[in-house]
Figure (cartoon, helix red, strand yellow):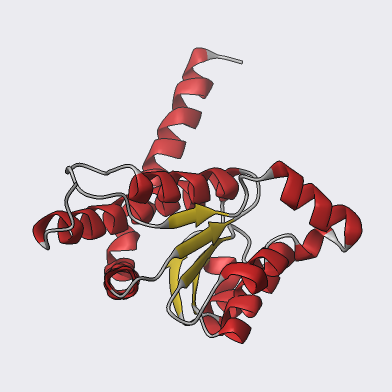
Length: 198
């Protein structure tokens, strides 16, 4: 491949990233709504449970890490659990029941009405995420979908949703990280300013 072709390919990918990032401005009210609801639930003793598959599993762990650790400020650790992190539990459920149930069974066991359950799905059709969010609604927890333009059905079935205006997996994952960082900033600021410090 010629260097000119590769440079054009990279420029095109960067241009698409900038386009989708710019279009994400329309999702800022939804990002803010998720952050506000998460703050409300954390303030009253709730827990965030989060999950996804593949790169979305990494995003779920990333978000939980930002809340348990810190984003920018010194403050107390906030209760967050990435349901993808326990290989024994995930493989047990997948083996004994079905892979599609790996998050739903954990949500049924753990999530309560004061909690938030946030599922990442770049396609919006992942059965593990769809079932996990359905279990959240069954348990009375707030269900949140982070998805793509293909995931409108998943978004409509959740209490709150951040829908990336793109379908390419790479662009969707990039915007999911942007959104989880924006939420982390708002939650982090609340926790530090409300005396929720260490």
